[in-house]
Image (cartoon, rainbow, N blue to C red):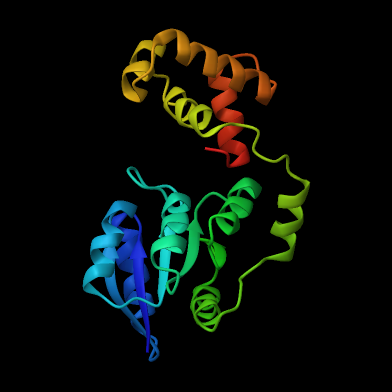
Length: 201
């Protein structure tokens, strides 16, 4: 029996995935988490073979979670699920230690097959996405620039961003200026939009 954990902040998606997977004779969903930061507690309670993790979760995203699990629970295979099929996400998922990458609109049989394959030690690598990932520009942003741009994407004023990241307004402006230059955009909103489209934030 392959024991599966699902981490997705959308309750309907999480429940539907669990119902689908529990129909398979060799799969059992043993834990469901509404955010990435709930996963460590779930792993303390349940033996898990494969973790299905959504990329975009509010407190601990799927990429950060994959990196964390590769260090703390290397025996757990991570399969990243996303609504957003962006080349940058594909590359970051594998760099973070994931064993596979799948978009949520894939056929159910592809998801079931992917779980079995990563459990067996295989990697789920779509050749077309891999080529797009190679052709796409590597993320030029620092971790701090990514963090600040993620806040800027919501339209938050610089003073609010500064308070959220515990930096001075001037320092935040400098990071935003650097990010705008690196993304070759005109302002912080455009920079944030381009970074999202590339899968950098």
